[in-house]
Length: 123
Image (cartoon, rainbow, N blue to C red):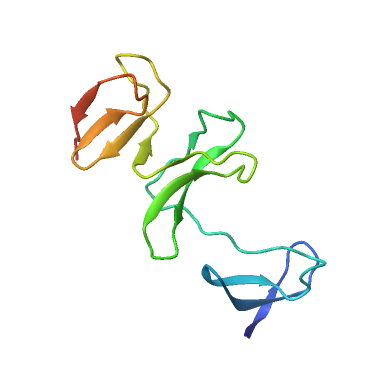
């Protein structure tokens, strides 16, 4: 464990350290379990989070599995366990008006399973 110099926890002003957990390396507060602050993964610079269609309170953020596979999950987990393997795009479906599309290979498809809308991905 390596303690980070010149950086303190924004919640309790304790020291932050690079730690190892079951999901890999992360930065967390040394005052755990009293303070549970951790530095969370960030989305790609070009990713715009979309609202969760299930709980309607959270947003879908980019995450990665233990093996490094990228997926998109609601930030209200464990209250909401909605996730997607394909990248959501903040563009409503022109056919059924579902709130977002998903990027699947070289196409944009409607995230609604009951809709068959798709269009080629424009780059």
